[in-house]
Image (cartoon, rainbow, N blue to C red; front, side):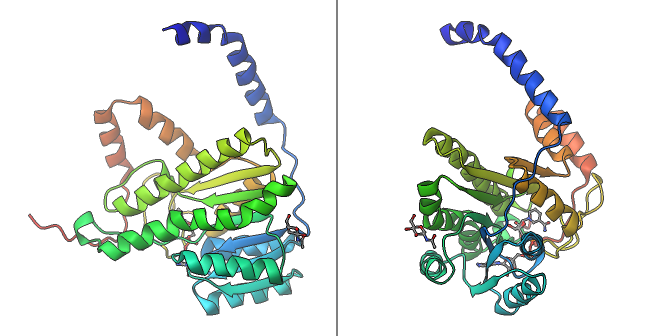
Amino acid sequence: MQFFLSSLLLLPMLIICILESLLKLFIPKKKKSVTGEIVLITGAGHGIGRLTAYEFAKLKSKLVLWDINKHGVEETAAECRKLGAKAYAFVVDCSNREDIYSSAKKVKAEVGNVSILVNNAGVVYPADLFATQDPQIEKTFEVNVLAHFWTTKAFLPEMMKCNHGHIVTVASAAGHTVVPFLVTYCSSKFAAVGFHRALTVELAALERNGIKTSCLCPNFINTGFIKNPSTSLGPTLEPEEVVNKLMNGILTEQKMIFVPSSISFLTMVERIFPERFMTILKRKMNIRFDAIIGYKN
Ligand SMILES: NC(=O)c1ccc[n+]([C@@H]2O[C@H](COP(=O)([O-])OP(=O)(O)OC[C@H]3O[C@@H](n4cnc5c(N)ncnc54)[C@H](O)[C@@H]3O)[C@@H](O)[C@H]2O)c1
Ligand SMILES: *[C@@H]1O[C@H](CO)[C@@H](O)[C@H](O)[C@H]1NC(C)=O
């Protein structure tokens, strides 16, 4: 009670903050320069990771590209070099902590200190809980969230020393809102969103305001990651559109990037509207994709 009464005194401050953020909506944000920065992208052998590498290459960053797929990551590196950037490809299994730590050592010795880290590698096994194998559940958490801990622990210390850097988390709309037959994936992406948010406040508590964080939360994207996705919310996103929003978000140091931006509205509405209404609304969204259903009555 005491807390709420004393909080009332903050009302004028609330109004000032709301006006400030409304005003900011109309002022175009300046994009920062990433020329010469060492950018590490995991899962850079295909899809979002690959296209993000191309964008940083065009901006003359130095690229460190990680993927478990040797052919894919080497192809991405070759294309980045064609775009005029230095690029180093590494075969790394992001589900393996030791592999991450030893590869990070190699990167520091052979390339230098990473100042922009993009944790993008991800896996998904669409199925009901009964049809999801235990090793698949472990793999999902290892790649989609635990890897973020190991890469961040490996590269954040140098960023802390010079109070300069950026940690990017590629999560998902499934890190905010839930769908059946993606129980494992949703929980791992909720964890990734939690990692991003808690790390953000921890960096602030440690007064490292020069280290930025961004989190990407997109709806279905046309990369083949999830097979045959569809929803009445709109067409499946093209990877170029998502990467465009991601780059804009990173360069303007946006903390949460929803694609499409209506996802942000949906997550807000979900917390306010009655459950029964949300069930009806979700049915109308008609979210579909290929999944293994192992449960039999
Ligand atoms: N495609 C979508 O519908 C969608 C929607 C929301 C979020 N996302 C997220 O975007 C990210 C990128 O997905 P995408 O659509 O580009 O998928 P993708 O399959 O095209 O690319 C993922 C890349 O990660 C690599 N990878 C997988 N396991 C790895 C491991 N253990 N170690 C290293 N690399 C590994 C793959 O080899 C591949 O090159 C993922 O984190 C995914 O969860 C995707
Ligand atoms: C990387 O960071 C370490 C620790 O801050 C520093 O000693 C070293 O000189 C840096 N290396 C380069 C190439 O900048």
